[in-house]
Image (cartoon, rainbow, N blue to C red; front, top):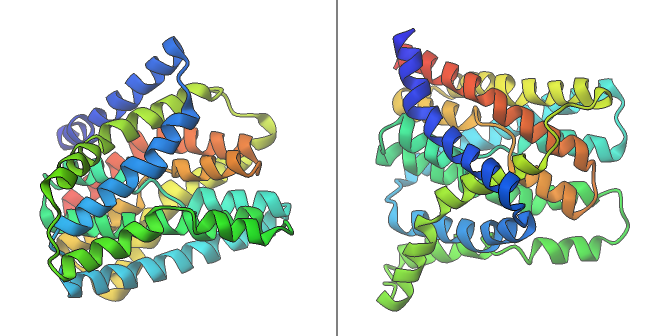
Length: 310
């Protein structure tokens, strides 16, 4: 039990405190979540993705392993969610909202700090989390935008939105600049560092502000659906990840980092997409709120179980 409490206090509580500060700021000052979201979407997130990809040495073999894991993991998750939405006979809008709440997990403003705390800043596990974050940033900005609009007719506008996302361009630029060893001039490097350093704090505060704007209750009509989303994301995620790493024969810190990366709560991206495109906003908000709250316990359990094995 002492190990469990140690993990809870040193790995989970620092993030929880930052989120709580965001909630408090929202309740006192009523902050503009759209401005914060745009800052995260178009400035802080692209900056940290660029910085980490440009500066972190990630072996090609490791990239291959993580990509294979991510590809299989996402397919398996999708199949499980698809079975659930068909059994529940959801409407087209609810189908996409449920898929997004499970497939899009908070690998950035929850996953990066968690990785840094759980693995004591290990560069290999950080590299793994960077790769996961990179693809988890791409998926909501491509498939996510498409899925919440697939039942609509104006697909030209959908593709315009997708190609307007900066992360799509930041990733290849970072890889090319690193591959060709192109140096960044100091007048540009310094502001990039300032912005990327602000990412974790700003992202956690933004999550807190978003939670502070939500009603802290679950609608009766959505209670079952929100519960299903939470179970699939917080329990199904790490269980499926464990099955995939076992199937692929991945062991040690790599396996542990991949499992921890899959155990995080629903991404704020699912709410941003729901709000932006008017697609089951109430469900999306409640799914994020509940999964973030319950993850305090479930993520601690996952790290505790891995500590017993690794």
